[in-house]
Length: 317
Image (cartoon, one colour):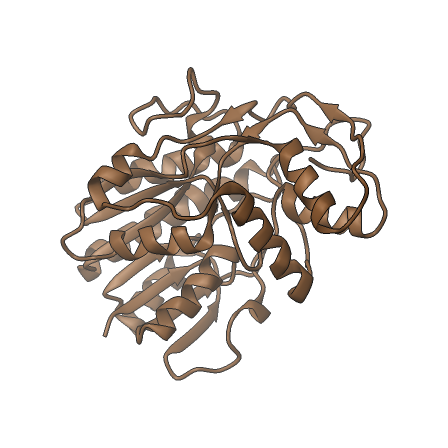
């Protein structure tokens, strides 16, 4: 039985993985400070699940968790991102917290450490799709701090994998244009679209690459997780309008803000070659599966790691 420490395990990715690991027979220990994650996203009680409130930025807490749980694997999903001006918290969690987890994992001799990184680590790319070998040029607090955390991980003696993620779409997604458009259009509120292009990967395809990356003999290093195709934010808006049965409508479009990037599309070719992984779900299917989940479960709090353009209030994205 694997013993998996899941940092940030109450967030969207973490909570979905916690359920998946428990169903697979693993013992799971979730460490989360609930700054953006929700305790209600995790099972109430399970004999193979332990939940602890605390931050990876606290080295004593991290060391105590490793001593108590003795993990065989670590999935590092914890991240600070909700306030682009709070550099200190981003640094404490995304840099210092990653160092704490890496050092504790080294001391414990874990079999595998899987880290989640953001595509914003590439900054404004010279070309798209972005190869995993492209230079890292982040320019936001979130991107800079996440990139620094990955850089420290790469200096470790651990068997590690860092997945540079496109927009993973699935249960409990609480960031970005999909939940924003869904909630605002359903409430009869106005929206706008940024003139940006993103790539979206279904949660089930994300699960598949995580399973492969956690295998003992799997390749190590940095890998992009994406379908490799980009889609405009306006395309998402149109799918949401259609899903809600609303008449086709015009929507204001604005340029990307100063802390945003016009086009972010990752090239997954090296991931496909290394793991034999290939995404199965199309863009339209991915978005519609997400909207169907909202129909049943609703949307809770929505977060963003970019500032709202001036003059557009809450009608974000």
